[in-house]
Image 1 (cartoon, protein in one colour):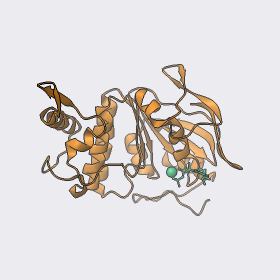
Image 2: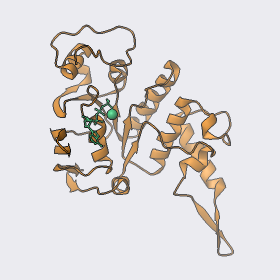
Image 3: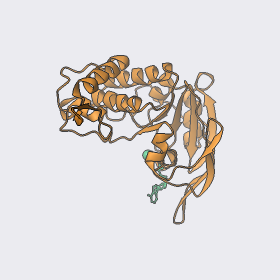
Length: 256
Ligand SMILES: Nc1ncnc2c1ncn2[C@@H]1O[C@H](COP(=O)(O)OP(=O)(O)OP(=O)(O)O)[C@@H](O)[C@H]1O
Ligand SMILES: [Mg+2]
C-alpha cells in the first residue's frame, strides 16, 4: 500500500500511509486507539475505497471496490467478530457461501463427506483440536473459533491473511494457540498482517512491526532489531516509557 489517504468528513484517518507485507512474513500493525489500523486494513480488505494512494499486489496495481474483489485476489480478512454462524457445525461454517456439491442423476446434492474431510484436514494442518466435528460453533472456545476462522480463510486459498486483534479477549492458553496458528500460516509461505495492542504477543509472533500514530506511518522495524521500549515510544510519541513486565492488555494510555 503506497501513500494511502482516507478521510471521513474532516477527519484524516490515514495520511499517505505506506504499508507492506511479504510472503512468508508476519507483519504486526500497531498504534494507539484511533491511529488508523482498522481503517488501513479495511482499505486492504476492499471494505473502504481510499481517497488517495495505491495498492500493489506482486508489484501490480489493483483496485478493490468490494470485499469480494480483495478475496478474489487472495486477501482474506478475519475481523474481530469472526463472522461465524453460531448455530451451525464447523464444516458448514468453513464452506459457508461456497458449498461443494455433487450430482446424482443430474441433480445437485451437498457433498457433505468431501466438505467434512476437507475440514478435518484443514483443522489438523492447523493443529486445531475440537471435541466433536458436529458441535455447533457457538459451543466452541474462543481459541477454537479463531482457529476455524483461520481455517476458513485458508480454505479460500488466500495468500494474505489479515487479522484484527486475534488475541484480544482470549485466555492465555488460547492466545498461545492462536500465535501457533499464525506461525503455521507463515510456514505455508503466506503473508500475515496482525493488529494487536499486546506488545508481548507482537514480539512473540511478528517478523516486522509497522507503527501508526494519528493516521501517519511513523516507522517500520525488524522485530529482532528493536525493543518493546522503542515500539511503545513510537506508538505514544514519548521518548522514555517504562514497560510493564506482565502481559499488558493495552499500551499505557497515560501517554496519550
Ligand atoms: N466510519 C467512520 N466514520 C468516521 N470516522 C471514522 C470511521 N472509521 C474510523 N473513523 C475515525 O478514523 C480514525 C481511525 O480509526 P480506526 O478505527 O482506524 O483506529 P484504530 O487504530 O483501529 O483504533 P483501535 O485501536 O481503537 O481499534 C479515528 O479517529 C476514527 O474516529
Ligand atoms: Mg481498530
